[in-house]
Length: 82
Image (tube, rainbow, N blue to C red; front, side, top):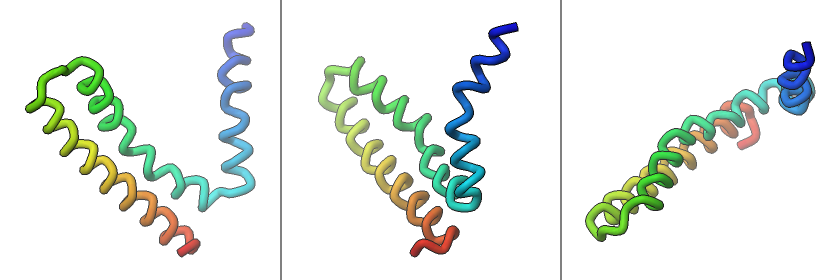
């Protein structure tokens, strides 16, 4: 029975955030869509030691930065903060 309590204890800050900042909170989560790409790039950086592979990863981090910035700006614009 106690295992059902733990997820609720972990999720209460998220629920509190959504309660007081509903529109801004949901739109502020848009940059989190880039997390899978960031995790893939991190694993490549930690596992690769070759120049060409790291050069491709550098290009990937530039794309990641672009997508993160675009989603962040879109979230701010859609919530009326820009």
